Length: 343
Image (cartoon, rainbow, N blue to C red; front, side, top):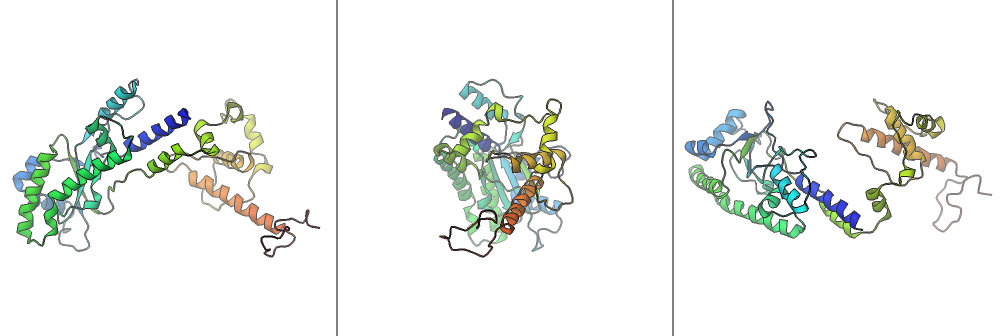
């Protein structure tokens, strides 16, 4: 039980810390740029931001169809700072070989549309920022929710004036004052903040917390043979070694014609050798739990399509083999009987 708990807690931690990356790659035109609040204040935040938006997407300020805007990444830090907290808390060795410790993360992201109205639903607080500020891991989701709501409410309060019916000049004055307070309150500087001017503010760089965390917390409380097998793996004697340099004979057995599926999903790209091996194993072995892992573009969907095609064709064949193919009432004992069993 303790092994299961430790595995799931580690998984949850990785989900929590995976969010909040800032794209700072040199040469990438979509990468975020360092934000200099002193320079922006010198021109006036409102005027400077609007000028920068129009400079990148000309005419976007006046086009009704334009949906450009700004995203600010504040309280940024190197991921190594979070790693140091984890290493200290769990008395671990240095993890610099296992993770990208130089990745830049943000604590909070704030989005504005082209008219510099705060988009409240796009304010995002990362779980890494909680770890960094509280010097503890998130073992209670309610604690993080309280921390997150406090930050969001604080930012919403600063820009609460936008709900009023203001002329542009009054809006500009209040925006400049609010942003000045934001800079001071969150200690925004060129070293700790980035910004991006985006073409579609409602679809570019949308941040979301992991969908899996609630499910993983639920899994810690549930008892399931399938989950235990997934987490603990198969016994060594049940595993098939697919290393062709050590077990080439197994491929001859797996790729026998009798092991191929009856159905195949029509595709421009047929299954590769190793995909076919996986398909043949999936439809013939007795194991009733399987996982498919791999980064985008490695063929997971192609593999699954052929497995589903086999299941559909197999079901169709079983229906064809039925002596009576009409629909029976639930209590009829002959439902599902084939020609061989019906007399």
